[in-house]
Length: 314
Image: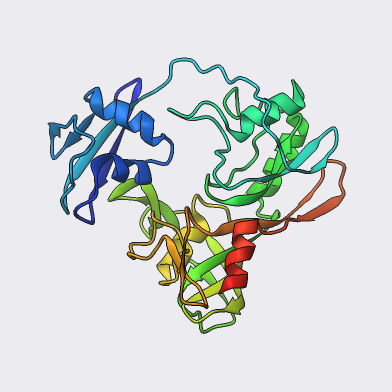
């Protein structure tokens, strides 16, 4: 890693995928178009040699090294993007984030994020604890995960909410559609999570260098080939539900990063037809916390329309 660049090393597990698509699926912090520009400018090497063809077909075992320049300065601009506001007062904002929206700006993706939207909505009434790129952001959910997020509108509120996250006292319940039938009605997954040593963009169950991670789940409905679950976080590691469910052989439908099945992006419906799914089927449904004024507040959001439709059609 150089002073102003980050280097990501990845190992190809499945042969035949196009280079730019593989990187687009595995480097979540950068858009596919930005990755293509990096490839064309010589920032990628395959098995130690610079590769500038984004159309290269990869082979199993190929070693990739992608260099992403660190931005020297980033000015985040407010953008008039519609927000689904669940609750708001002078201290806290609770929003229902849409699937496909990135929470905060990152390399190659500086616009269209939740931060751009809340900066427009809140003006200068956001906490500054996390700096100019993440004003107001106390916690985040993945781009393709929909659901509830709390935003701090001042530094005192940010500290109060962050302390609760550290103490694991925030109520966070997610709905997820996973592959196959889960026989137990409920369970707890207690496995440490850390960086995947084979792929820096993935997390993994890591008993050597991982941090404590606990997920409680219960079955809501079984569909034979799929199971709808409620997962409650006791801790909040990156990709925790996705990693934990994959670790017990019930990966999330649509999750290309942690599921290697050929049918990961489609659901077989009750009538025999198949429906394409883009991104993991995961929704942050319930969020509860103690407001900076001392009152416990809890919010519940509806499942996105596409999620409801798939459940109905199953």
